[in-house]
Image (cartoon, rainbow, N blue to C red; front, side, top):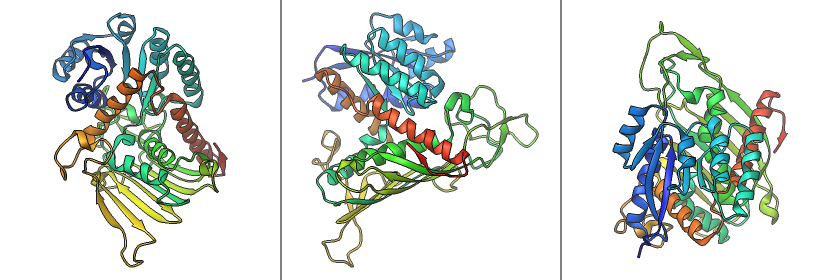
Length: 397
């Protein structure tokens, strides 16, 4: 039975991620028995009419036009940060200092220095029973959680290859307008940090191995884009024409890098190849991961998110990959949802994130991924940028 003790949430930002997080906070206690009851107490945004409309639409009890007001309020236990990366460090530090738990969207920050400071503050807060989590939501996709379980059970043997791609196409039109995601001062990086960070986190989490070095190439295909005001969210769905005023794109459009893993302390590390782009026409959200081990291989594509492909070398050699439909009650998270065979969607990862976070907070244990986990991803992002800036020379993480 769900406890009546509330977990009172204050959320900063209410665009794409804010909507996804709001849905998760509302939905989690309706399908999972939680030890704390999430309460959508307040949402903050810069524009008074915009944040009020968002509060009404997304189910928040009240609205603020300054995130600092959320920190000051005594009726809020947790701050959920859904804003661009340039704001994460300040908001998180203030919230933790005020004794409020923090859920922060990825990537953790816009630089390693910021992420290191955030991690130090988070670890000090944890000693006082105040906890943090970084929102790498793909960890909560049932098929990827099943993949991790299979690796931990030894079904793949020693991992030799990691092959990761994250392919989208929403920026392929060169006259699509500028968004904050194309401004390095706000986003930190382009496809590398926006979507490549998910691949890095998933690969390290599932294999249990950390990336120790990279050789990288970054490319910006369209150096200028039409200006269309203060756009927030994905953007990129309108054509403003060749004659519109244009602003400089200061991030990468595509990132490609090879990597070496540390082996998790048990064996020689795997080698990996990563690709992230928002220019792959026809690919809408193809977050892909393939692992090849000494005993078996598995492969995943988020555009077919309820399935996992698996090949066991001990089976008939001409059998090829078989498809596991990850919709059964014994699969991670799935038993709390629909009858067998009924698939889940993008939003469910955020709901599962809330479930895991709330359970950890109630138990007084560190939620995962921690800020320290996210810092490791930030270090890989920085190494990729450093390698690309130095003619793809090998860069240690």
